[in-house]
Length: 97
Image 1 (cartoon, rainbow, N blue to C red):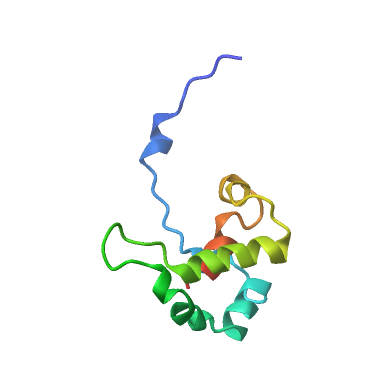
Image 2: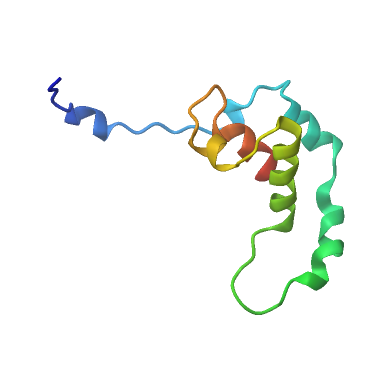
């Protein structure tokens, strides 16, 4: 089927806050309130160098593994690509808080 692209749609911009995409009663929000992940910094402090490339925050890495375990996600690539009900917003809510 041959169709022509509508170029008007390319000029549209939509601003979305990831925080608004996660429902107020979602498990991720409850976990964020219940668990203080700051205990991770002293545990991993000696494993990181002061020089070199900037690191990924160790709390984000732990939260991503935690989300994988809680929700039974085998690969973090799928939720990032998936266009399901919550998509990346659930992952981002816990990891970027």
